Length: 266
Image (cartoon, rainbow, N blue to C red):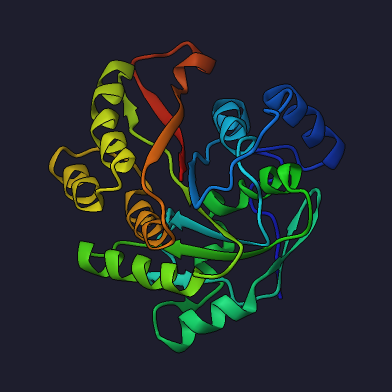
């Protein structure tokens, strides 16, 4: 089984040469030095809106042999935590292999269910693959995980177990999330600063409960709890904000924006 692209041709170009040209335009020249990060947080909107933020993150980190992709479930299909059951994901740049070993551990421990419905139309993980391929220096395998609504304790426990699984592996945790949705830019910045501060300090309890308390519409705050707990187990000590922007910088409409943050966890 292979996962076909769902948003190629809409969120990003479906043809490899056109996609390469757009990424050249968005990304420019990468930094001279890259860090071996434990994890990153990147947006998942159409490339014309959030691609520059994604580039600023991916260009700064080394892409290792294993990449765990954590994203929210926008469609509502499938179980609460799903891993893709097939072997390959197609992209305009070629196929990417799924890590069956990591998937098998999660499934055997009943931490996730093998399911293709949650992944069928979900864009949050798909849009990360062209960036990973562009900035990787060798081959890598992915563990694609789509996460629905979990309570805090379950999200924290899942993240800690994921971190234990990744100990000793050459791995990167990729958290896919946009920030506040469809509110004025200044309100988005003010609200998002609350959650960015929690992520900088790796305090997932604040991230989870303040997102709920202040109705902050960060779509991937639960995957972020999972991912940050995992990178803490792997030795991360802080999150670094690389970029913050919003859709108004592309559309000119600052009254109803979607905001995007890029972070590196080291």
